[in-house]
Every structure is written in structure tokens, then in C-alpha cells.
Length: 254
Length: 254
DNA sequence: AAGTGGTCTAGACCACTTA
DNA sequence: AAGTGGTCTAGACCACTTT
Image (cartoon, rainbow over all chains, first blue to last red; front, side, top):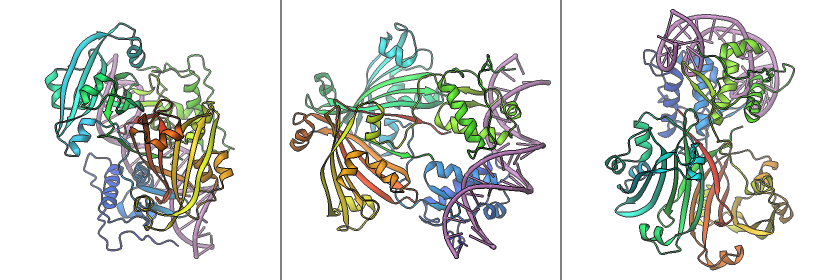
């Protein structure tokens, strides 16, 4: 019989609040995640079986399973039939998220700034129309921004958006990131297709970014979709390779 | 009342085989995915409510939900409370997977080849030890490979692996990809941390890849973990930016 | 043989959206 | 008001791993 190694000192303090509007499985999931994060559940330790856990918490087993499954999906726990549920052994944190360069820089304490170079309505080119699922020639917003961190250029961002989704005043674009603007306009971002590559800087890009002509740049093209799968944004960005790289985590789903 | 737009011609032919060892939810999930893929369920169409679907198939609602949830996780379906479940509107396919360059090239009909340049045991450097969770100086495999497609160099791959996990003969490395070797050695790959960047080619890299010195290269560093979270591989790869880019899809989890 | 997670059922009530 | 997905329960049986 495998004995749960977890919580030898009883400091786990799991328990749900049934008067809360927060779903029970989510409460449990958060508590388990917090316990893992602060080390109360150490890597490799067993969680204790689902039936007992359900009994102790006064929940049904499916509800406990749902909580555990959420953490398995996040990569924090691993289930093995006949063995139990273990805390994943090592490193690995951050899930892959639809992140915003602005927020990423802000979170890293890099004091991001934005300078709006272009903010106009243009007829959609064939490429933009294809990416956004519009007809060629339909009006679209074209926004070009220079993104800086600590006063130094980091990226040059060119985005196209369908009209009528949100208002894009320069002042708002300079105060925050595009994703945050879109979310505060009530758009629920759902998924994105990205392509990441590299190429040499053109003279114009070199000028914007303060790099030499021909310097290596990291390029990203991204189309973002809302909850119904409609394209809400198409971006073509270039990053100074000397100052930026993409970090992410992949999970294999069984 | 929203009426299900899906399957106007009744060609959906859903149905499960209870004598099959394949889980019922998985059978249903596969059938729905196939229907979406071949267009029998068109983008934007409603799936019909879960209760009816369960009744028609002789399944319980939770089982039907589990099948639908799998496709929601894949980004093919969207649920909206009070509305229904819809097929996502547009493009977007491929989920983000822990993929293998070799398999990707093979799937694209690019006739991949591998030339093993280095395949030795070396003491782990500080960096490699940190990435693999070993002590500095412990022996590790060091493998350097040139990957070609249609006879042209595409990438130069340098990997480090702990000893004792699998046998790494040159002949096997040249016949397939590293991930396939690891999987066939019984390793279950679980997650990976990746970092993608760009830089200028060093003279050695330029020589390997047939690029000019200083040409822009796409770089990837990746540490791969097995089901228990132990690092099983650390790779530092460089790709010819002119011939390769990373494509992937992100999903936002609510 | 015992213990684990994996799957499945047949209900129930609630929150949200739309009409 | 009607219809939808979101959550939850209290069981059941099975497949797999370990002892």
C-alpha cells in the first residue's frame, strides 16, 4: 500500500467554502496549486488517493478529480494508474499563455513604453484580408508601434484589426498593450496561430530599433481569434534578437 | 430556441461501439473531430444540446461532455452558456505539440536526413548539469547532428542526455529523430521548456549550414521532461532562418 | 490481493443567454 | 420563460501497478 508522503505535518489545510460562488473544484485546485507553489507539497510526493481526499473534504470523487485534472493539465501533477498522483519533480512552471509583450515587460520590471508611429484606416491588402477573413479592400486599422524597455527599443509592432471592435486612440495605445485594450473592450481572446522566425534587419527596421542593417531580428506573425473563432487581430512583429527571446512550455496530452 | 444547424442531411453517423476497448468519450470525440475536419460540421454551426446528444447516443451527459471538452481543449469547439456549442469559425488547426523536427519534415514530404557529427560521453558542464538536474562533471551524452531536407542543410542540433536512458548508436540517430528514439526506449515525454531566439551565425555554424557568416539564425533551447518531471534531454539548436520557422497555436484557458 | 486511477451512469440544481 | 452549458452527487465497474 502506497502511503501518501504529502503533508506530513498537517499544514496543508485544505477545505472548501460552500457558500462561495467559486466552484468547489476550482477552490480545491487553487489550494493544491498554492501548496505546491510554496513547497508544502514537495516534488515527487504522492497526493493521497482521490476517494480519501473526497471523503475528507466532503466532496464527491468526480469533483476532486476535476480539481486534480486542472493541475494535470497545467503540468503540475502527474497521475499514474495503480500508483497515485504525484507532484511533478522539477523546474517547469509557467504554462503557455496568450501573453502580451507589454505585460511581460511590465511584469519583469522593465518599464515598457510605446510610441505610436502609425494609426490609420487602410484598405486591407490581400494578405491582411486573408488573415482576418475579410474581403480585400475592406477598411482595417493599421497600427505601427515602437516598444521600448528601460528607454531602449525592443520591438517594432505592426498590427491590423477589423473596424468596429474597439476604439484605438493613440493615448490608449501608449498607456498599455493591445491585448489589454481588446479585453477591456469586451473581446474574449481565445486562441492564436503564431509563426516565429528570424531574418536580417531592413534599413528601416534597423533605424527604428537602433540596430545595424543586416542585424539578426526575431520575427513573429500572429493571428488572434475570439471565442467564436473570428480573427480579431493580425500582427507582424520584429524583435531585437539581442534583447528578446520567446520562452514557453509545451505539454504533451496523452 | 436555437436550433442545431449541424447535420442537416443526417450524414453525421455518430454512434459508439460498446464492445470496443476504446473509451466511449474518446470514440465520440474522434467522430466529432472527423466530422469537423471533413466539413460535415461546418464552422459556426451548433452541435445540438448535450442532453439530446446523450439520449440519441445512449450515453450519459457527463460522458458526452467529456468528449466535447476534449475538442474544446483542442480549440475545435467553443461552448457558450445559454447558447450552445459551436464549431470554431475559421482556420486554426494543429494544436501545439511536442514535435520532432525530423517528423515534421517527413510529414511535409521534405525527405529529412541526419548526419551525426559528434556522439560521445563528456562530463556535464555547469550549464548542462543545471538543465538536466545533474551534478557538474557527471557523464552525459553529447550528440551533434546536421539535419538536412531535400539534401540541403536546415539545422544544426546539439543535444545532451543523461546516461542510462537509451542507447544512441549513430545508425539509429541517422534513421530517425531523437524523440522517436526516446519514445521507443519507453520514455514517456511529458513537457518541455523552450526558448526561441535569433542571432548571427558564427563561422563554424555558417560552415555547417552553408550560410554566410553573420547570417541570421533561429535558435532554440529546449529541456524535455518525462512523466515524473525529470529532465531527459537538453538541446541547443540553430536553424537556417531562410529555410525554417516555428508554427504553433496557443489556446487561452478560461 | 489490495490499492490506485480511468471510465461511466442517472440523476440534480444553478447561472447565463436569448426571446 | 425556455433552453443552454456549468457544476455536483453517490454510487458502479474496470484496468493497471505493486505487494
